[in-house]
Amino acid sequence: MPFFVVGRTIVVMLFRTQQGAHDRFKQTHVKIPLSIRKWLALFASEIQSKLRCSFRRSGSIMNTTLNEFQKKVMMMFAALRAYPRIIWLISLGVTVSAIGESFFWPLTATYVHQALGQTLTMAGVVLLLQYTACLAGNFVGGWLFDRWSGRKTMIIAVVLSIILLILMGSTRHFYLYMGLQTLLGFCNGIYWPIQRAVALSVWPEGGRRAVNMIYVANNLGVAVGAASGGILASLSFTYAFWGNALTYAFFLILFMVVIKDHHLQRAGKSEADAPTASATDKPEKIPVSVWMTLGMLVLGLTVLVVAYIQWQTTIPTYIQFLGFSMPAYSFLWTVNGFVIVAMQPVLSWAIARFSLSLYAQIVIGALWFVLAMLLVTFSVAYAALVVGMMIITIGEMMVWPGVPAVANELAVRGREGLFQGIAMSGQSIGRMIGPLLGAFLYEQFAPSGMLLTMTVLCGCAVLCFAFHNKTNRKQPHNIGIST
Image (cartoon, rainbow, N blue to C red; front, top):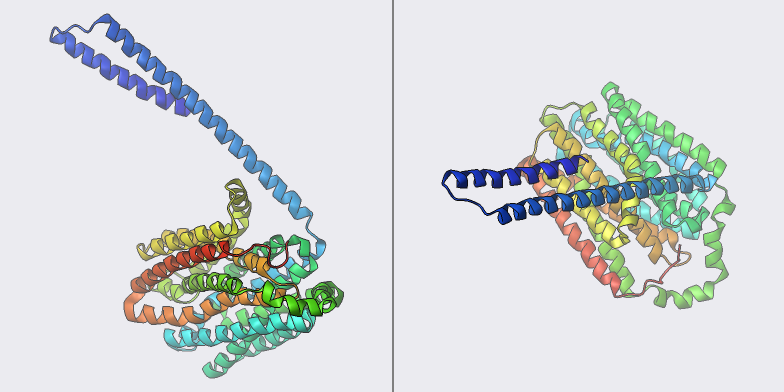
């Protein structure tokens, strides 16, 4: 109704303008014929009628769209209730472990720079070593999941992580801390891909829904952990380390109770039951085009992570330089987690409404990264940082789950862990390169130069994903396991 009133007002103003012109013509003794005046009245009436129909149609379309959205949301929650109980328990463990990880990982560069008295470049070196070890852990974890035991591998990695975190909270010696952080990165690299591989193994028919469930659970933990991590770190960084160890202990107990060896026998049996077929079909199932497709996908992901990691490394220092507190920085990650949880039904509806493919989804997500980095580059207001975090989170929601989903589509039977490890390697390589590159650009070219460079890199990621899409169209889509 308000739209109709506005439209009618515009038409009346136009008609009054015509009437004013008529009065001026009368003053100059020019008489407008009656037929023209009738035609103008009919013209104004016709415009009002068309505007009324148009606005009614728009209101009808809007109501239909809202009804469709409400139905999609209700269907999504109904589908969530139908998820297997074991997936919910795994997701609970992932959420708790992510809470502990978020106590400290956004503050690593700040801890090395302030508490240990090192330069930002040295903080970048620490993160470089951590994520180099994490990259190695991705491949080792995927290989052990396929060849040995995913359950035992996960238990060993988490136990070692707990021990390392307790030691890290007990020392302030820089080089000892650097060694412990590197070993922790290796353990993290082992169990991160196993989390997704376990979800796909215990719920194989879930496919991308299983991966997305782990993603949302992880980021829910990030939201809670980041909000409290800044407070813990402001009291003592030791509390952040030990809090992380405590959440890992909870995850370990839950994992040992919920996941048994028979839950993960499906992948091992598929490989053991057909050794000859696996050996003979390998060249046909993994052609060069598949590796090219996966390579471009991982390259695009790596470039985006290089830019994204700046929010955890150089941007905290930049925020303090602007005069904002560490709790204000931690609040950004609370916003990140809140947007992921709140926008999940909206994004699911939008993808279904516009029939977006996985490849269109990741390209659009990369464009959101470009927009966010542009905003932060050209504004120093805290509100711009909050909005920038919201925008980049939407991009993250489209890209981060999309890459493992594509890797799962390409995965060969019995090699699910390996393909998830390769997909996760993009994250590890980006986290390995990003801190050092960001610290160098920050110190050599000031924050503005660093942020502008990251914006350009996000644009390069768009090109990588577009080329990946073009390469993928040239190959058959029936490779791997259908989900």
